[in-house]
Amino acid sequence: VQLVESGGGLVQPGGSLTLSCAVSRIIFSTLAMAWYRQAPGKQRELVAGITHDGTTNYLDSVQGRFTISRDNLKNMLYLRMNSLKPEDTAVYYCNARPADFPWGQGTQVTVSS
Image (cartoon, rainbow, N blue to C red; front, side, top):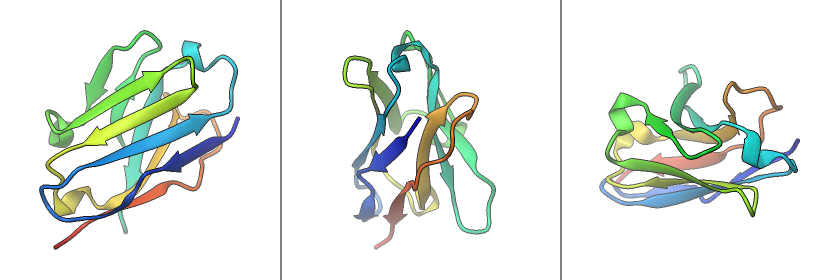
């Protein structure tokens, strides 16, 4: 399985970004997936999860600002991030839930004025 994240960048506080994750696995549609992030000096944490049939859950600090979604036909996972805050700065990764696959390179999100 290969996970390729993209869409990160530098954004001002209050801005938005959409992250994408391409998953090279033909049974993607059966997997629970999630976005994780790791800030400098901190442990990796789960940000948002989505079951195979679309039930979602979120870290309290991103609830109402982030939206996770998936396209099972394209083997793609997405994370729409609105109202970004400096504390959202981290490298963002996608993986299954639990994180059973080798980690990809991640995509850097930097929120700064």
